[in-house]
Length: 369
Image (cartoon, rainbow, N blue to C red; front, side, top):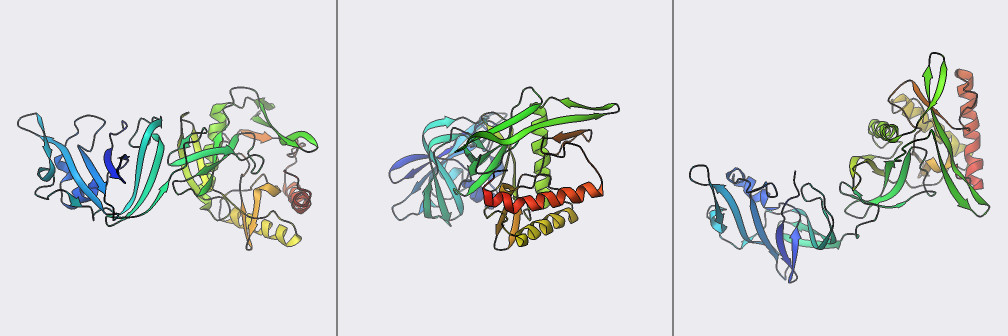
């Protein structure tokens, strides 16, 4: 849908754009909405309204203009009470309950859809039956862009892990609640990815190089990590989060197109807690992982390390399961992942024991993974 022409609203003597359609509630209640026709693609609702908030915080509908079918194949413009079939204006807007998003100033980013464009100055009003309650300014647009209704901010590395396939960023919703967003790394070539971390001891790898292999009848071969592969890995992670439902892994808020790149971005809950530091913590982690396997969230997490584990009030949460590939012939390795490619029950037990032994000692040492 084309970007829509907004209504206007007067607040504290200042004119704002109203990025929404609060009049729809009244029109639907009175069976009026289907009367209107779209004069153009930028006004598919077929009307434009003018609103006002008085000094006592009461919301009023001051004016409305609509397009209806005229004689023959033409259209005509009607105003005020003719639009609302006898209701007189100004009208107390007690039919409005919810959140109104207002904007003014320059348009910082144009989005060719609905009211999704981003403006220099934006404000949220909470309205209950036409009475304006709280109001809150939204954070200014970020250089990282946005994903649907979520604003993206600075990269979270090394505070939270990213990986060879995705970049992790801080994000917020319209209420300013902290979230996490993950975008695929736009790799155009090569078959290894690396991330580095500056520490007091010097520069060291924060993430070991990842490699992806294809299993062929005659053996396996390394393949290129390109944008299609990193995007598919992100979609696979989104499916895992949906299956888990926010029990062990972060609750998913869905895949959203990034503005301005158009790439999918996975938005999720931001976890908080402490890494495992005792044998009891490690046992809790193992139990939580086993429960997730039993309910078929995944067959294994695949990347258990201190910065992926969050313990709070006896509850274990984890993030960043290892990459999954849509093609079953693909598999990934780093030099630290089972370099001999051992398989079978004995290898599984040995790997589990190694990781669980590593968790508390690495957390105490402040090792980032």
